[in-house]
Image (cartoon, one colour):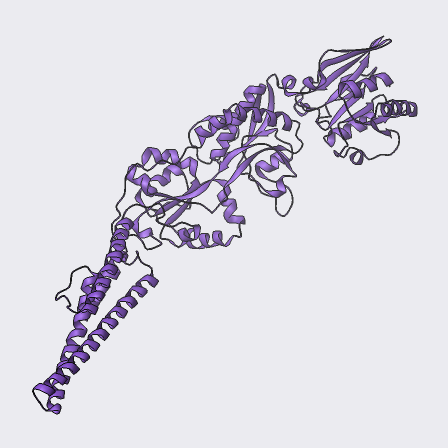
Length: 616
């Protein structure tokens, strides 16, 4: 290997700081290592005819930008390149220089080396009589039988030493020169939970429709539109294969099923679907984009019988039990103080009158005491009943007749009326407000949905069936036990159904449907009237709200290319535009208020109070 070519490549073209030399000539390794170290390079030399471990050498944890120089004339070069392709080392981590003088590039990189893709950083060196030529080498996918593409980087003359740069190497290795796939057909995958979806034409027809399709999640069609952006940008086509589900494993093995299994086994280059975030998936897949917010919820129409907090027209609802007890205790205390003041006033008045009568009229004590005692008892009994009625009338703001004349009683009356005004105004306003529409009415958690009289159904799509089969969450277990295990009548919707079929049940009330909310909003906005939209409630929590990952195979040769393209699409607003189209907002309530009828449970306390007073 010519020392000047190696030195120019490392220092002037790729500007590496570390070099790994695979050669079979000790002289080559010595002179090239010496020249590179003189140029302030870290150098590691590996003799290809000796035993070595490529994985321990190429650890992807290098000091700095690293070049890998391979003398392809050596006997061990084909096995080295084959192992490098199998371990996916032809990527953005290393700059590879293949010394291919007197070698054909198609013989160096045969079709069996399928990891020579658009992310490869390979430079091929050949020679004419006087000059060396350095070529950038890549393909759009050798697994797809795509041919190798060569672009001239530079020409180097050794006598005298002269470098002529034709194209900047980093431009040739960028998306600018590698974004034209020339109509290449990539392998695609998607998830459509329908029978007999087998051909690419069927899949494309379903995914390209802007409307909702049964068995197709909203994020499936969104990622299909993102894939269409890439397809237009890079000029490739896709041949899709369908999977009925996203994940799963074969028995107790590690063999993945569904869409994730297809991608993990590298049977698809790109997928028209997102995937949930799971810790064990980061080691198996690369993420090229994140933008779709996956959000599901129970949707139901509120009716008064669903008031789990007892505040829809309940006459006891404005005050809690503690407030009612404290109010009753306060009124009893006021009555007791009033009666005590009456008793003390009467006793003082009686004693005063007795003294006056004894002095001025000289009446016998025994008869007068007997008469006074009788009058006091009669008057005390009369005051006890009167005071209770007076207090009750004041609380109900019905006035008081006769009005007490003594100062202590008047002070108590004023206090009772002030207490009544404050409590009565709050009470009446709370009762009226409770009869008007409110956003917090009805069940607010999954457990409250489970304990409510609502009938429950789910969208007929795969991830619910996986959730009910594999989840050990007690909330899910209780939901299955109370809502999904019982048999259903012919007029009731089944456990699984489609959004269009659920709309009449939602409008009628007493029914909750769980689905991805962005799928339901367009249909609700079209078929619900203003009052029904105001009655619509959502309860989330059964499935986590998360940002979905658009994934490809781990260390895919398209990862960096597609990730860069999606970053640019987000920057120019294409992603935001698609999100606005696909993630419709919840229809707004246009009605000023909704009056709900008072239920029997709400007025039962008032009737019980009335009956108790009648019998008493």
